Image (cartoon, rainbow, N blue to C red; front, side):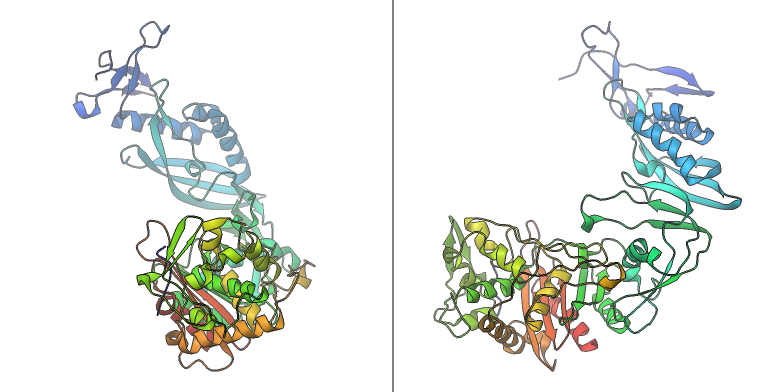
Length: 550
């Protein structure tokens, strides 16, 4: 049974602008009324000069784009940049592009414009220290009208140069910044992006960070050098585009388990969006990371989502640490609770009138937790999450991660945080770590590469739960796994087990994000399936598949 929160005409005349550029006659207007160029009133002091407005004609788009591409191809960066809306930035980028990419020859072939978008193919010869190789790719540019002058211009974006470039990125050819790696799992089995597509981005990040700490040797590559991100969790790894000469791979041992990784990938495969992570509670070693879709953002370790009722693991520890409740203590779950002027209602106006805290936890009845908001200080939940469960500490996992956030909040927002809404944000790795902390009895920071490789210091929680709290929390999670909201997903899973479901409401989303976390002996896992509904029936099977594979 689920009890989650519902938680007039401008003066002037039509103008035709004619000119001859590069042998092409450019007309700013057309006999077609849909392509008519309207003129705005002359500004004071401009002696009657009319500024064209309205949509660009096909001729304007074609001519401006070809002028730009021709100037770029010929190496005239200043001329090309003058045809854009950001001449200074464009000129600098074009000059650096040819020099850093080591393109000795380059041909730009325009395709057929689609409205204001012009596709084109760039064919080049890379020439680096006597090593030559062909390279080609397709990208596009958008032509727009300058609002001040009325002239058509290319909208400058890094993707004008290459579709893989973002702001601050650079296209470079040279000795790779790190040797290629041969990543292996904890048992020595090879981990490749072909066998484990979900690990492609993770393997790139590992190469960036640890390639030079292996016995490998770098080769020569054309690659995208990513801009440094202000937030480590957002950092993207460099991307190899073409290998001119192969380097020698260096072996890098990870904590992953290839069999469990495969199970996690199979469990999320086919879902529109899902991610999962698994850790070893006694050590914090990351055993699996999986995402669907396989390519793209790594939601499992870098995501930032409201964790819903899986947060009740932390809230329960807080309430029991403070002596406010215990599994067998009466802890009713009323239909309604008002905090800070916000009226909280259980799903379907359900309630547990005279129930114990254990019953409310197993049924995931929200108001049993929210009713304790009046007993707590604004920073209590934040402190419990950080000091006991390690959430928000600076995790040094070996790859970019978002390490969770439980901000200090007040009144209704603080109450919402108790059930994993409000400002609370986590990802499957964070939530798997919550379950792992309960199973192990203390926080062990997750990591994917041994800290001894680079002498990094792992994050440490400043305290542990009281013994009575720990035993109580384990009993709550076991009850949930055997007869509560997680029972269906955990049916038949043997060993020392515990689980918690979650459903997180999201604005303008019909169905909530489904969450599930559980442990089985020395294995803990968590999953999220966005916009799918109840955690037990949607995310539960993903976690079950990982637990039974291990």
